[in-house]
Image (cartoon, rainbow, N blue to C red; front, side, top):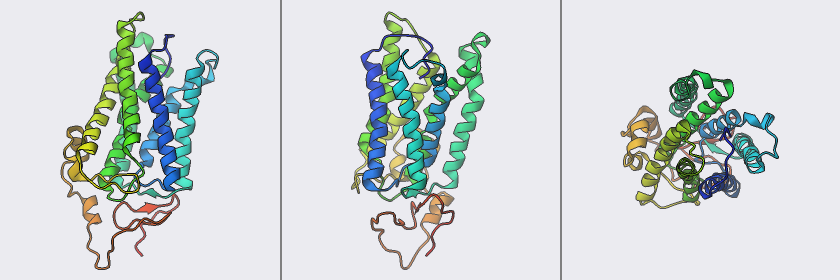
Length: 291
């Protein structure tokens, strides 16, 4: 949220910031409480870190006294994102993400970089064109699609995850509150409208609404305070199924169904492996455990 205009806070802006902050705290707490990062997409978390680092460059030249609320939250978003990445890579076991998710993450990153100057050209014209604006626009576009690798991971994983409904509600509602904030700002005394943030905020919210429908419409036993979402569940959502694929018979999933005569039901083990689907590995492992 680059601050291009000084304005008074309204209730929806505050609720949006609080929801975003709480979502970060819930995720960090869940990872520590379960001593695992199962089901959390490292790719998505890296993309979020890129979003915040590129958006909040004004930390270097805007005085903290100007807007203490923003200053503290910006530092928290950057710091918490980097912290989550570190504990996922160095401390707790995480679910291996397959090549498809890495390709999708690369497309999100590269596509956002290419689209940023084009979107600026459409909405801002050349006379507002500068590096800060390009990076801010890049962050808005990228944030709207950051969740896609996470959704792909949940589609591929049939083991317990640390992601729960509280995390999804707070993360999804933050942008919804921001949309209401933009509406209030437009019809209020400011009469300010930010088309780029609004458009991509709606896109981001649409992904979360679609996923929320999938998440709550399914009837599945929740394990270890998390849930299991498979391709059949995701086929109920329009946006997600269009991007992740409606069919669950792709090559990656086929590999997961290789018969094993000695296969047993995976059991929860602290820091252990999870079996043939959603293989959990530490950050320095590079090969699937075949033992």
